Amino acid sequence: MRDVIVAVYDGVVLLDVAGPVQALHGSGGYRIRLASVDGRSVHTDIGMPLGSDLALGDVEGPVDTLLIPGYAYPDGDRPDAAFLGRLRDISHRARRVASVCTGALLLAEAGLLDGRRATTHWAACADLASRFPRVAVEPDAIYVRDGLVMTSAGVTAGIDLALALVEEDHGPDIARTVAKYLVVFLQRPGGQSQFSVRGAIATPRHAALRRLLDAVVAEPASNHSLATMAARVAVSERHLTRLFRREVGLTPSQYVERVRVEAAQVLLETSAVGVASVARSCGFGSDETMRRAFLQVLGTTPTAYRQRFRTSHAISFVK
Amino acid sequence: MRDVIVAVYDGVVLLDVAGPVQALHGSGGYRIRLASVDGRSVHTDIGMPLGSDLALGDVEGPVDTLLIPGYAYPDGDRPDAAFLGRLRDISHRARRVASVCTGALLLAEAGLLDGRRATTHWAACADLASRFPRVAVEPDAIYVRDGLVMTSAGVTAGIDLALALVEEDHGPDIARTVAKYLVVFLQRPGGQSQFSVRGAIATPRHAALRRLLDAVVAEPASNHSLATMAARVAVSERHLTRLFRREVGLTPSQYVERVRVEAAQVLLETSAVGVASVARSCGFGSDETMRRAFLQVLGTTPTAYRQRFRTSHAISFVK
Image (cartoon, rainbow over all chains, first blue to last red; front, side, top):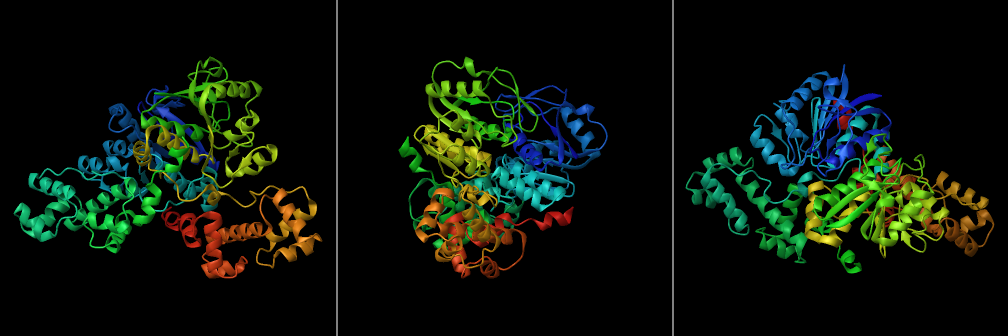
């Protein structure tokens, strides 16, 4: 049995704990204990109390896995210095460390993600990247492994992360059995960017660049070639490309493509407008261009995207 | 705020509670209370205690939604007559009743599924059907609505069910926002039969039929036409069809197709055998026939199925 310590605190997201813990438990291969700063129950983000097995300070000897769930970001009570100190202490004695969702921000605050690749909930990716420049954020991943540190995307991605741990420790057959029992995929099709909403890109400090980004969002169908955009902010194309790389984390054309994809996502989700019309009104030259952009950015096609996120009118009718 | 009562008891599956509760909470539209028979904490299937807000007997007046999570089937402590009586009592005052996973068996024991369509965890579908013949079981559904009673498939399908409730009560935009926050699809592609394992079909009482079913499983690639099978058990084709309908719930050809699909699933999951060879060795005339059968039975193609359930060798290598 491998020893797993789940670090809990007030504001912890219930499903960030329950998902991974249920998956690990399902494999039969782990002794799982919840530990809080003082060993007492904590309040989850939804109010319901969550029991604790011991205090973090009472965790002795080596630990197999230290698991840090997320908190209701940005409203949750962020754990204090004492909590972060305990995390650091146990992490030095742990074979590996894993975070779920916004738990990655706690790992980063404890200095445990410096120089590493990591992911977090899509809504927190930009913040993780800007507050912790030494962390290489991968916004589209469901989970990221870098050495002995693993981080997962938002909420239910913690289940995917736990299945990966089970597969590593107990083999693919047991991981597959657990996944089937939970009625989830052992490997999800596509990354978490399918689930992100508009505005996941951080706001740049450079004022002219900020206005340019807003202009693209306001009219995604207009001409936003590199030359046009450079002329608009009165800088060279090369300088604009450098600005984008530094402040947005994308090339200018990648940014325009993202904005167009996001505009198309809204139309596909909320309207019955045909795919070709969606492509035109969002600035794609053709529906084939839009299709390629969707596959590139979201790992799925416009038609499949619409099917997944369409709302079920059947249900409303039965009401 | 709509009043939700979640009926909890010893052996309840933690994730069956946490998933739906997190989704309902995320919409901001529900007052959620956990209720146990005596108002005290219960032990979840994984040992961790779960607090309770009140006793089921103290739930007063009308209730919007009564939610019954599942228990670790068949090992869990099945709730007793007092619990079932409380469920019946509250259900009469509830606008609607919903179960997650094996919670459907509790609803059935309380008589609340008689004459209704329903689903449950794939591993419990056959048992639900045989123990409660007045329930029309839909083994492939992620969730089933029949009037004011909703039942969901296994474990994480409870999240899908909760999103459907949110959509019904608060509209598609809020449901979509909650789904994105949880990093799940608002509508899953495909049903739960994608996750089921071999042997989900109940064992028939008719001995010759049982031997015939086993023979098909043993050699899915052999000739299993209706004429061949009828000759094998020495009955008319019409009688064999009637036997299949009554004892298996499928036509003979549907059964053969299912078995072939399941055999192909195993090969696709665990081997690198090409799709055409898989089709041949599992009794499909061509890969196109296999493709059509996969779409019919699992709602996905052999290639997509392999991608979803393949194991990640990359992870094992890093170990």
